Amino acid sequence: MTGGGSGIGRAVALELLTQGWSVVLAGRHRARLEETARLAGEAAGRALVAPTDVTRPEEVHALFAAASVRFGALGLLFNNAGLFGGGGVPVEELAYETWREVVEVNLNGAFLCAQAAFRHFKEQRPQGGRIINNGSVSAHAPRPHSIAYTATKHAMTGLTKSLSLDGRPYRIACGQIDIGNAATEMTDRMRTGILQADGAVRPEPVMDVADVARTVRHMAELPLDANVQFATVMASGMPYIGRG
Image (tube, rainbow, N blue to C red; front, side):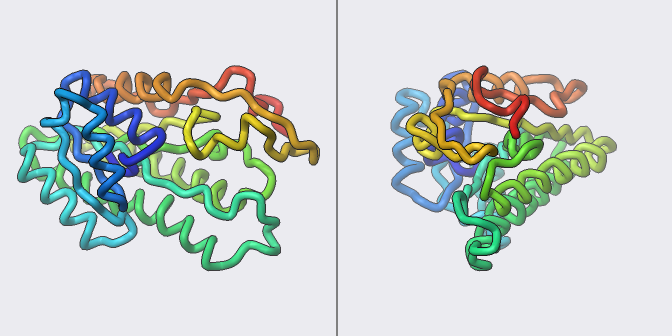
């Protein structure tokens, strides 16, 4: 579970922990990960806090090694860590450093974690496992001034398809959940007003992040013979269908 210290990652971690899963909480901020574990109550004993920068290959390697030592065979990677960085900045003003940071976390980090999971799933016995990538409705339709985030989420879709295809001989299933307007810190601004494609600024509805968590758990608990390839979960009234 990457990005397990807040938002969607925290909600999914708590859902899985309370339903009997053992969960490795990965993220850059130990204090936030430890808070997620505390929120799990009696289930906290099945959580492993593992501070990790997913953009660093050596840290990703150490993460999966620690998970294997603690829990043995691995069953699921939820590739969730991500940044929205650069939102609201016109493309001609976006700093290259910001672009690079978003690509490093959202795409390179997702690849490194998927690669490590793939290796473990192939080598363990019985062979196999599942990867769920956190995409976005931005993988289909962008918001204004979101080029870095949108480009990485489109790339995430390609990553999902390639992993799904390459994993078939090894019982490795890979799917993607595209989420729109879940109520987290990242979406707070949507309730007060956010730029629309027509130039207006309007508030948007949000949904309970617990609904996302339950959807991820459903995807995770399918047998490896079945896979939700792509799922879209969003606030029913958000301007996505017909955006623009």
